[in-house]
Image 1: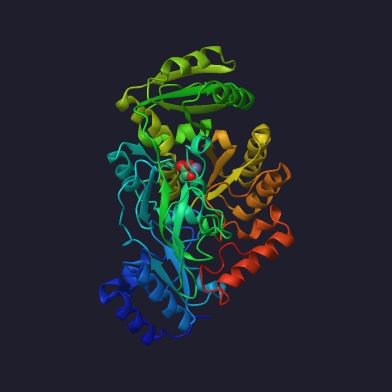
Image 2 (image 1 turned 90 degrees about the horizontal axis):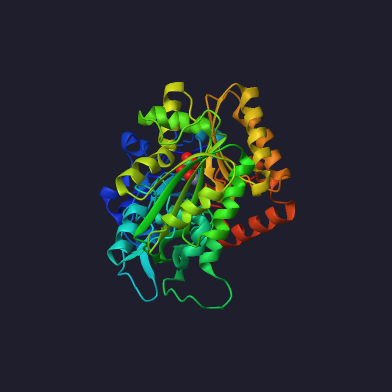
Length: 465
Ligand code: MLT
Ligand code: ZN
């Protein structure tokens, strides 16, 4: 149970970061205490917003002295309850939200090394603008780009649409700066692409979900900015036709940038939400595939060539025009928003699964997921990243979400897949972590965590089965 507010802690935090950045009023804290889906929430003593790595270290030291947990947060776009405090009813200890939203400094782009240093609270859109200003681009992109921040994306090893070309967030981090539970600043922002000297902080912290240290800045890879992008929307007659198309695209096109997938139910929902029909629509479509090719020259011809020879395509639309592309990409990018609107209407927060299976098991996964949704009586909205076999299974109006998760996640594990492809484990998926991590692995993870955070103050409950 939570104890009475330690007033002296609030005073100490105020000295550390300034009164304007220790938020204690109920209505001001409220927005930081609930995730954006409305599914996960919990109270905090204060929201503390440091302005530098030194201030982050001071805040963590104060919390350690007062035995108060620290929940790191910035964009609060997480989908697994990892960036908001745990519910009071769960017996969680008192916590603060450590908001990294003021850490927004950007370094100069090094065009020769193709790197830039950014602080944890920088959004993806700002990072991309900075890169493009220097004639380069960012290797990771996803729909929440305007709000999601670098620190959270590294902490959850975010993926998005360009993973098939450039990898996940983990692969972009060439240097990191973070603060441990004892308030020590660790890591380096030197950005040396080659250094073999034992423990590698970027590798350790990417995907650690705020449990090993609080990320304050990173040195990130940049990639060429391709001026020509061609986008195709393709309706396919079967899942197998979609995966065959994926294989051909990967083998034939060096410009291949993204291969995303939208189930018909998701296409219907987003079309209603946008108030317009997609350029390709067919009652026979089993899946819609959105393909991006990007290059220094126009990649349209090669893409059209592949599409003209592929089998199992019902219909396709291809565009290079920027306005048309934007209108087309909205059918993919705005699905999450359409789901949120439908959930508000249903009066129940969406239950989201983010799973991945080997590509050849995708059809089986879709079948299992649909059966589980039908058994519950909820509406299933699947979409995601075809190239990684990564499906976001969104359940609108689910009555028994845990039952759905039991069925679908067990099937995912038996198909050789993962219960979290890019959103992380957080608290939402922690009960099922044992399906993909054996007892020895869980014990090793707990031991590493205890070594870095013996008091268990960093994001308790997250990543804990
Ligand atoms: C996406 O691919 O759009 C994101 O992972 C968000 C989501 O799953 O809702
Ligand atoms: Zn995604």
